[in-house]
Length: 297
Image (cartoon, rainbow, N blue to C red; front, side, top):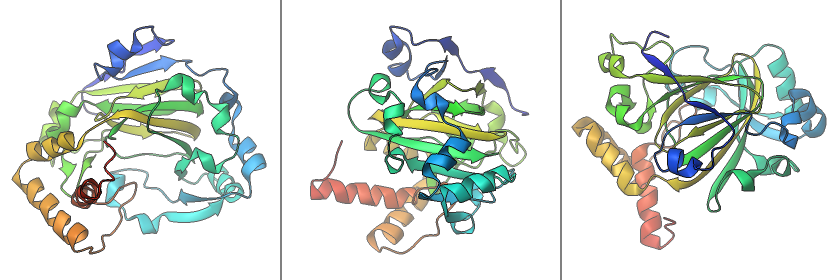
């Protein structure tokens, strides 16, 4: 990695004042051994194959091993496989991922993780991630997140929300960065030199708190199983509009174009790997929800 780095803060055990020190301050932290001993700590690829071998699930295959994954088209990598087939593919040395699978699709798994003791009541989304030699892109999420490492190891690279402009978000999706934080192209993206990335390694039983709006990149060098627990609080529509405003006229124009073209006029868009619909389309959908009375914030 050829960019300035500093370690992610690491603790052993949740402090009594965790909410004030980290959640209110929106400061990331690794809690070593936070979930060691929970039933989920016994999960392995082999146990998933034995218990859920016939369950069909979406998977991404032939993943890019370098560069920015968001430049790839989703249709080139997305497959539906049985868990047994996926584990066999993973064990063959392939770069592949069962990514963001709703834990409810795997009966009994939710009870193996003490979700209610980890995250507050309210909206929550718990997802399973199983893969080998996986790399995400650099991105941020709109909700607070606990990333629980169950099996294998992951490297996490984080950047603060205040670094947004220096991370060169895509114009059509402001939550995704054009920067590969492991090998930033500072010739093409010179402001990336101003970013100090926070780096840490997660082992089995470790938990990483990623506050809403924090940019993060995750890489597993080998086989890995993780859970992520998205939960409130979340970024507001005003927060997202403020981010768009900060990024300048070129992004404003692209978001407005996508709001009209993909939202109002319902024209299709080509899905990129690990990416939601264009930001303009999402804003159109949120606006429609608010006008229809289905707004949930």
